Structures are given as structure tokens and as C-alpha cells.
Length: 330
Image (cartoon, rainbow, N blue to C red; front, side, top):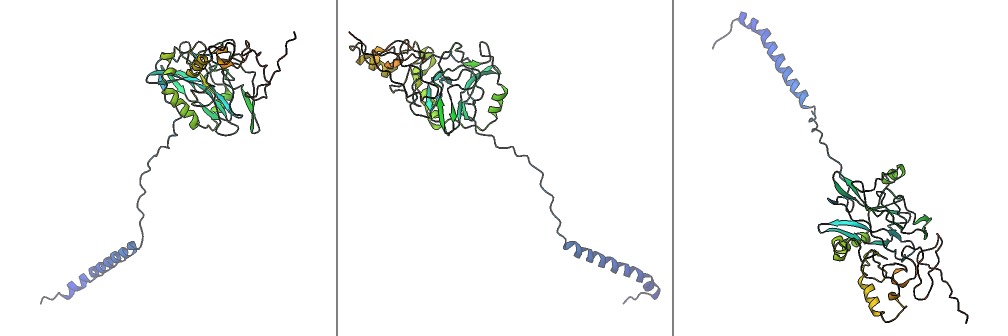
């Protein structure tokens, strides 16, 4: 067995100590590192875009041609206290423009008013801006829809507490029948500061009844502009989707609605009685023999009775004052 010399053992002794110290240091370092939890680096931040709000009804509808002029038509009486008038307008479908009749609508909740939709010329196309419910009436292109919607605000009534006070002095005297904003021949109106504030308020989308009203209008061939020449036979209704009820009225110069034609035929032998005695389109006397002018301005007599006087601003449209007939003295 090989033995090291004493001199060699002495010279190697310091090295052995160093090896032992280094080994101990490494072992001790491993023990210390094993007891410390090193966190993993965080993942890179990923941008998540906020969810886009649901688009409004008809908000993305556009057309390459301007809508027809607005037809002139009488306003049906309000069927229920608290209903609010929503004017008719031209909507667009693949078959072309079709008329959505004006109608009385129950608001989604007390205190809300209707801002009508309107067509605006933007970027070389005509874009429809959908209507909505809100605490104030916003911008609707300056379009004069009549019956309180003269282009700015609403003059057809106002909320007083939980009741709606109607203004029956408002008439549909439409001088400018242009149905769109901007472009060649369009209305040059811009939103006011108040209308811009109204646009920032919380809005409520059209009711289910309003959406059904539009859908039924889109499927009615008689309401297509190319079929009615811009004068729809169903221009306004007393309730949404009530297209075939006796209260529905046609535009001036349009053919009478089917129910009015049938009534006129049934009463053709009764001179001065029933719907046949009145002009169907409200020219002179109110349509369907009610004896008032189509625009509420007074007209000829119907059924032997003089036209009813105008109601005050706080009276409900359906409450017509009675007028006693004077007995002629012989």
C-alpha cells in the first residue's frame, strides 16, 4: 500500500481544509435556497376591449337614395289617457322605402318622452338614426313631422306628475315636407346644446309594441313607396299594429284604407249619413265622419252637425266637448 510522505501530507493538509469548507458552504447554501419560494414572473398584460353596447333598433340601416317627402295625414284620436303620439316615417328595406304609420304608444314608464328617428346624409349615404325614449326630447334632424314634432322638441303635451297633459292646439300644418337632414335638398339643422345634453341622458329603446308595428309595416305591400306613390293608404293608426281598424287613416290624396272603402260602399245609398258623408282623406271634414278638419283646424259639417270646437290644452284628445243642436224655429 502506497503511503504519502509526511512532507506531502503536511502540504496537502491546508487543501483538504479548503475542500471541506467549500463543500460545507455549498451544502449549507443548498439548504438555505431550498427553503425560499421564488415567485413566478407575472404573465404579460393583455388588453380586453369593453363589450360594445347593443345596437339600437334600425341604427345601422342605410340607403343610397333619399327618402320620399313626408305625407300629410290626419291624426287619429288618442285611445287611452297617457299614450304619447309617435309620428310616422319612411323606413328602408331591400324592396325600397316603406311607410311606418304614426301611432299612439304607451310609454315604457311615466316621465319619458319620444324622440323620433330621422334620416341623415353622412359619408355619401343616408343613415337612419333610430328613435328612443328619454326624459327629454333630443335631436331628430330638424324634420317637421307635425302634431307637436315641429323640428325641435315636442309641443304635443308635457308630464305633470304622473299624468300627461295634452296640448290639442297643435296641428299638422307641414310646410316643409322634407324627410331627411343634410345632403342635396335636405334640412340644414344642427343639434343645439340642450339637444346634445339630451343625447347623453339614459335612453330606453322602442317598446315591443313599437318593434312589432315596424315589422308589420315592412311586410305590407301597400306601404311601399313604389306602390303608393308616397301617399300611403294607412298613414296613421290609433294603436300600434292596428292597420285594419276603423280608426286607421290614410294620407291626403291616397286611396282609402280597405275598411273605409267597405264602409263607404255600405252607406252609398244613405246620403249624409255615416262615413260616406265625410271625405275619406280628411279633405274638408275629418275622415270617417267625425266632422273635424283633418288638421284640427275646423272644416265642413258632417252628418248634419257643425264641427266640434277646439279643446283646451289640458283636455285629453279623446274627450270631445258636446255641442247642443239648436232647434230651428218655423
